[in-house]
Length: 561
Image (tube, rainbow, N blue to C red; front, side, top):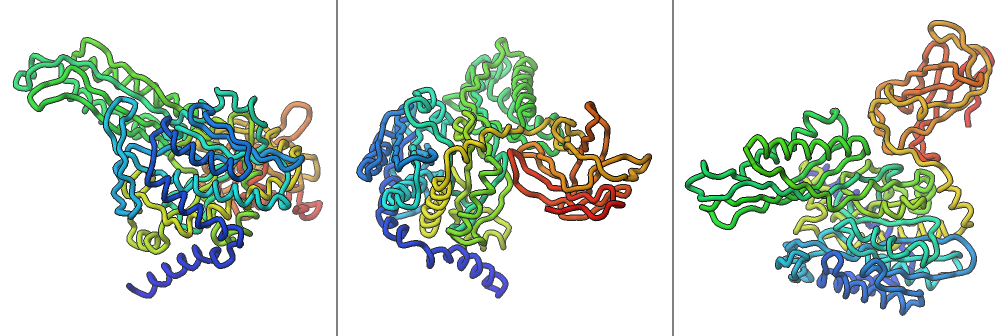
């Protein structure tokens, strides 16, 4: 190992463990029990919608702590409420379910469970997505919050949600009267562990956190027959193969370059014997997108291509296409994300709180946010710090969630998860309900139909300006603003960094509005006689860029704030 690599590993390891030395006695007190719960749940995973024992274990723990617990909400869902005087209501969610994956981690407590899935197939079961660690963290957090009521006030709601992996559990809980049977949350929270960050760190995303998800089942109908006489058949396997390849051209040839599109065929089922051409083939797809209009375009193209390939092969019947699961992207309220950065940095160290880009995974936590409740969903590092450093140095990737090899580095990941959860809950439960409700009163802006700021609609980029001074702007003098200004860009919008241009135009009611296209932040530029400095900041319900403009420079410098 060379010295550079050694220092990188040492730095990450020290960073990950830095919080351990300053972890409160509260976390250390509950950690052994939380770790034991993690081992138990990991060894005994249950599939989506069948989390009966898992839910019962979590419910029993929360009930023993003094929470008012309701079971069987939306199936196997658990809702635990702890009231501590007047104040806001804050919800923190964990998932309950595991995946049909055969564990290959080699851990002493690895799952060996097998069960029947909903189709009656015998499948292995594994907590390959970290929900076991989430449950362990929330159980420990629940204990700390009970034992420190003097540090917060209001209503704490902890929920165990079933069937996240089938993106149906949150919807089922809401359909079962979640918002009418229990106190309506003023804020909803969740976290997720993964190997994108080393254990000991957390990641924050402002605005769109992940993707829209659509699950499709396509059945291609052919004409079966003998494998030695393909001319008497219409082979659905060949049609399926052509369809799979053609579907990949949607992202590469139909959707505008730069847009996020993933079309993955996760399974193909057909046939029973090598010399029999079956009469049908089944495909399972997952589709991921950021934007609503791109989502619509992609789903339409999948239908068109699937039908066209079947017709081209002479199939007598067009394919059936079922969209059986769907969820929208999770949206993080930017003001909430900005507010909670401070408490997280104080709890685990400033160097351990990082800003991330939106991810391509999906999750049904969005159903809670879409009820008009501000949400904050953040990432928890799970990678072993040394292995993380080695993978970065080698340019390789560690096993991701859903891999049979996925195994979070429990300590410090669990320590960090508990400390982070307690920090954000205490922060939010230290103020008033009205303060948090103001967050939901701000209108959320979804991603626009284009990733090019020059094409963004004026309605999303307009800024009211006061009138002061004169500004030469290339063609003629215009009266324009001479103070700091700002605009909220569409949530999830990816800024291309290149340069800044200012465009002024007159609008109705004799008010000046400026449409700004941002291409480079943290730089002062001059357009005509109008120098502006722009920097990124999370404000309101979108990603914000503040532009400090000395427009009308004859009146002196701009007032910065």
